[in-house]
Image 1 (spheres, rainbow, N blue to C red):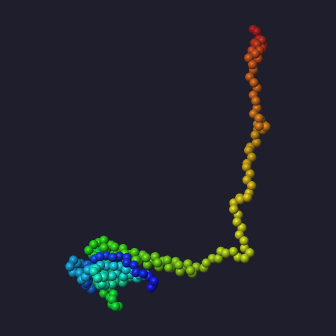
Image 2: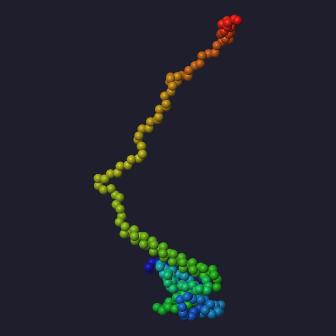
Length: 211
């Protein structure tokens, strides 16, 4: 889209470009076949990965002037970028210019640079998948008929909320026995006095038989 803006997702200060022999088999590329990697490079400069909407470009530019040496349009699930079989720091890029294309070798001195290069491309691929999934979900939501939950003319809604408004009754206590039904505690008789106890003892002695 024309409204999309360019975003630089990675800058690597130094990369190396190599001339590679034609691919003769489907086994892949090997950096060892490119000659002395320390001295046989064709060009060196900075590498930038730039995205714009669904497009992604790997640009190799001069560090001083910014002049573009080569451009690799990156496409997910294509042969635009291939890792070599014998090193994690070297790749084969498919560069394009004026409708023509060619394959070049490209590599880094530091493994951290190659790691960042891989991660940047993976993040771009994840972003494309996420945007595609979101667009598919939105399109599916538009095809599903929407349900009409509005009330038709004459329709009403009755809502019953628990026991709101009902009178609450407390359970009555169990009936008490007869002794406490009037709320009074029964009283015990008073103990006998000392004179009454003495009189009872004398009566008991008089009633005892004599042998």
